[in-house]
Image (cartoon, one colour):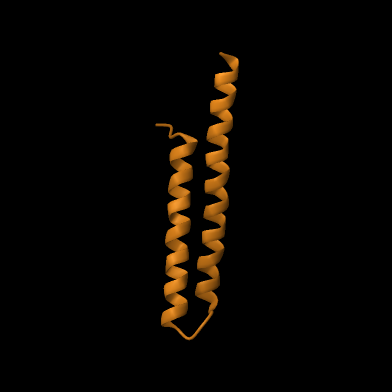
Length: 69
């Protein structure tokens, strides 16, 4: 089963938001910035980047299909 790049992009963006939320909670509950917080921010950055890339790929494919018609 193939998923569209838009669906995958939205999932990645939601994961980025979730990891960012966990990082903010970790900083507020602990005594500042630790290794785990940096790891969560790193994962959120990767997910945001992948999500944006997938959403842009969806619109690029959609534009190419429309242009061929």
